[in-house]
Image (cartoon, rainbow, N blue to C red):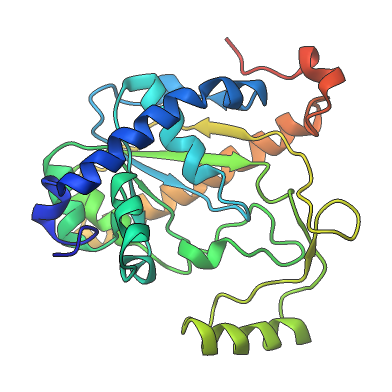
Length: 286
């Protein structure tokens, strides 16, 4: 039985996974003061449908802070557990790592498990760019690499599931890239990635944090939930055309969110987590 793909295992999780889930919920409650101490900028929680019936569509950053902050704040806002969709290569994990992902609510982004969650009206989180969107070469910060992926839009249209775009800024600035896409380093990294993991599109750029080190650069995180996108198909449009329209709307809305958050961050004295600027940190509009 595969706890990240098998529908029965997803709906009725094994006892060991349920136990891990309770532990993770307790940990999430315990770390709330620590999260608040960093004062993440969180906006748009009132856009979340309270019944939990929505598909969150987000952007990946280099440190993947979004994968933690989005479920954390959704749970605090509406009391619902978010079910993140994970890449198929993570779905091949075995042992404790697989159970940990399952306890976090993750499942492989395959159509049937997603349809089952939609039938159960559960909040779902997807990053259409997948793992390829995490490593950022110079100049690629906060850009989407969806490369035509529209499966999320098709499933949302099929189930008339609202899409809530959610963007995060801050995660792509913890490290700065030294190498550009198309250069020698990308070719070397691509060859290594293909040999070690198989996917040829997971090249890792040369990066640095504070100074020449890999110590992360302190960065405040900026998170915004956008207005829900209605996926109900109009009568006089084909399914394929409507799926393409919903995908385009989702991407455009997410790009606008990222652009707005970058503007908010530009004027924030607390963007580098300087404790002296804590009291002056930019807050979302009331």
